[in-house]
Length: 367
Image 1 (cartoon, rainbow, N blue to C red):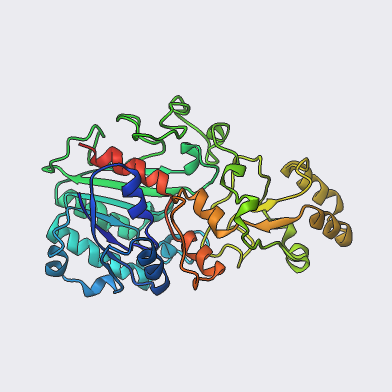
Image 2: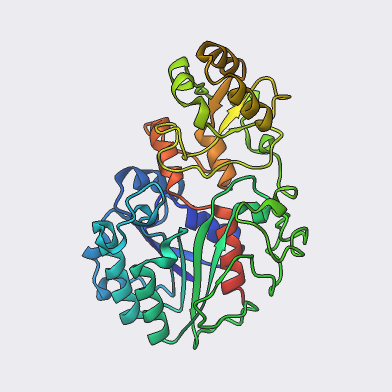
């Protein structure tokens, strides 16, 4: 495979192609964000990365890369729950419509796309499906969470994999042209080589239906402790101060190291405290989430008692390395020193789960 990465970010798709074990070469990566581009270059110094807006590329210029697979992670903010959900009215969608024009002209053999839940109800999605049908692509669509692969994180995302009906791949992944969206990982293909996740080990394949919190999968997830820094890592940790606890204790999603679920980490993590990700409880681990909620309900009028209790829990934000671990970035992934912790968290919040994407790549493009 000769892969062209569009909206390449910090290289999550590149790492996913590597983890897929399939033979490939990333011929070019295109990203407009300067800091993301620096991080990508730091991790993939031998890959051509172009720091330009996608609209500046013509069909001829992309054709020169001689790629046959395109990966797409278009800006998700127009479709997010915390964003304004302006979709096609958002200027950030204009580049995606340009990409759709390029797909119709160049017809890459394979496409993989990732975006937030909600993209599948947007006009950009409708136009994408229209073009895939017109250009004779076969495709499958998914809404998947890392919880379904044994990763303790609720990062529900929309995925689409597509192949030209005339492509050379002989994958076992059953394709079609249905607009239905699968809510389970496909089980109609061999497991990812060397992978020991709950899906590949067959632990969750019996689950045919689950609730929107993926409750049935959680028991098969690894504990949060497996993704945390060790005392030897010597990173500076960011504990919540009194001001944060006074204002936001009632909206925090608090997890312990033994828990098997965290909230989705977004680009606003550590900047906004509600709905952007979990915080880790480093003391009094016998205090479960239910006990904390019960204490709050019984003492919410006593601000000082609540503050003392919150301080005893010793809550801190997840470090960027820990978030990267939860997103299944490899240990060798790193940031340039000049990139601040807040920038790192923001970039990770915009990235992909490497493990989930690697499975879809293997399922769709294995020969």
